[in-house]
Image (cartoon, rainbow, N blue to C red; front, top):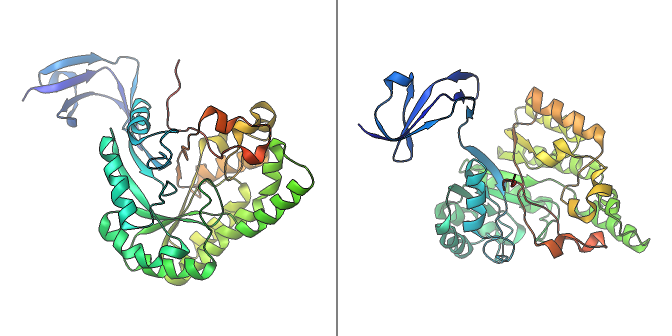
Length: 339
């Protein structure tokens, strides 16, 4: 059989080891892995000596802004940049416009996603107003659900605990996972209101409005509700070392709970608010260096199960503001840098 491409000389990287081998590719799929002289003839041969060959990455947390905010990004541009960065599967979040909380909104997003260059899954919304839509969304093809316990871009209402419990009960029957933006909305709202009243609009005010306790409380509450209902949950963008305790305790109790952190929490600290100013505004916020060190330890010991980007693009003007409260939250993650 004639292969489309054979790659020689690379060091292959798997989840557990590295080894030297050649790879043959046919119709976009791996045809063979082995010694160079065992490879079939190919239409194209690539010498990758001295380079590493990795599997395509999965980014379990992206916001492509389509539909509704296509001046920021579209499925076509977002997935093209993901592919250029080696990301071959993405899972896209529901805070678009309209939010992916109904079958009609899901179908609209699926239509927009026909331009995608990579594989994808779509999160459905779990909110107070669409509890009756959850099973229809499952039938419609969502990959999982997302619940916004704390506010972020799109200003979707944070459902009360009663609605979260009911949503967990429904989703648990079908074995789907619920991802959670785990921050306590009421604490953050009160703190932000007081900071604004005091005239605080500097970048660090955003960090002061969202102390680690808002995440610790939300993670612990979500774990209790999941334990009660048997729901499978995933804690998004863990930003503080304090969250590791309720995560570990829940796992020890047998709760089906996983967690992710993001590169900006692992690589940046409080100095980013001086260096990057409003550009760094993201939810949850980038925190102090002590949290960064603890997060790395959580990745190393398995408390944190994965790293995702929380890719969330905005326009230049939407990010660069003198008043931190008016700067949109989030920034690009899965897009490659030009060199």
